[in-house]
Each structure stands twice: as structure tokens, then as C-alpha cells.
Length: 322
Image (cartoon, rainbow, N blue to C red):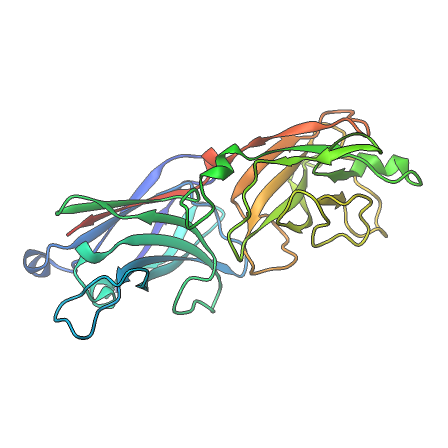
């Protein structure tokens, strides 16, 4: 059994770890030189109750033919390993034992690799929430796939151009609450309002965008989930007490609690991509699309910009010797 525990790069920190997978001993290596190498860059800690799963795709076999043959649009997705990453950036449980047998075909038939996030203990026969995908290209002897969120089957290149305005605002009846109520809108007054989110793709099902506030006034970041959404206009999934028809809301969401002052210069707004696994997550999924600090002493209807963060997203490079 080959179970690997390694240190991997965390979000915004770039370095790679190479994991060899394939033959178990020199004798097997001489008779079957096929192998894979995995480089994990900026893979962040998984959330409680979730695991990562790495997969490859190979064409389905045509029963009437002796060898494997590609049927257009039809592939088998094969699990390489599930694993977790802890807060110290250590990977646990990456297991490649029996990989060649599970794949079942020559490695030169692998057409794609992908990373998904799954509910712990519920990894099925195919990925439920893909977010890093890469097509295999290369030569007869060496193939390479770079798994990225910008792959067309993931979220596409358009996330690289996504930006957003955010505006502190509340109702006319509670103007003081604007210090802790924020929406993804470009609003200079209660009557001059436009969507804040710009150049955003439709998230690939079952993913949605997530809107968060991050308050670091007390040192440790405190996250407040404001809701999931898929379009720039309209209410998000947590809109019961919202005053505007744009993603966002109050921090905290529980109106029985005192509102949080986000204007001390230690708070930020964050847009993430969120899987379908949790309707009300406690912490953000670490695919950060946009991020921006709330300006110190910011007042209501004073829009501020969130910056695109897609260049800092994780990626994996798979090298196949075939």
C-alpha cells in the first residue's frame, strides 16, 4: 500500500511537491515503465467534512474491438486517490497502490485529469464537484496535463476578467447599519444603483459564487457567509433580511446580534466559488475569485473595488511516462 503524507503549497504560497506513482518495485518497473508524477501547487486545506479526489479519464472500450477505442464524448472516469490537506499544509492519504490495475488501459490513452471536492465518506464512482481540470498533451512517450480552474470544463478563462464593486448600504430606516451591511453593487445613492459584479461567467453546475465578509479586527479572521448566487443581480441564498436585490447582506446574518463594524480598516469582502456540498458553509471554499479591503472609515454609498484573484488559484501538473 502506498500512502503518502507530504507538504503542499497553500493559497498565495507557491511551491510544488512531486509524487511518483506507478511501479512498486524495480522488477515491475523494468517490465512496465509506465508511471505518473504529480506536482501540487497552492493546494489549500480542505474544509471539515470534505475531501479532495484526483481522477483520470480514459475512453470507453468498444466491445467489438480487440483494443481500447475512443467513442466520441464517452469516457470512463477513474479515481486515483482521495486525500486531505491539513492547516499545516500536509497532505494525508494520497494512495496510488493498485493504480495501474484500476486504470486498466495503457497510460497513453489517458485523455484528461481532474480534481474534485467531495463529501467525506461519500466519494462515488464519478466526481461530483470538479474544479481543476487538464487535458493530456505531449509526445508518444511523455504526456502532461496542467489542472486549472480556467479549463473550459471547469470555470473557463472568463474568471480571469471577473471583478466587482461593493457598496456599504442599508435601509432608510436603519442608516447606521450601513457600517456592517454590504452588497455587490455599484451604488452612489439609494436611487443610483448598478450591479457590482462584472465579467463573471455562469458558474459551472453545481457550483455557485459565494459572498463573504472577513473581519480581522480581533486578529483571527472571522468569516461571515452572506449567501450563494449565480447572477450579478437578484437575491442570494441568504436574503431574508437583505435591503437590496444584489448579493450581500448584514454581518452577522443573525439580526438578533449586534452588527459588526466593517469600517475599521481590518475587514474585507470576498467572492469565492462554492461547491454544492454545504448550503451554509462556516468557512470559504478556497477558490477566491475577487477580494477587496473595506476602506477605513468608508461611508454608505461609497463604492470600492474588489480585485481579481484567479491567478492565485491552485493547480496540479500531472506528468505521464507512457
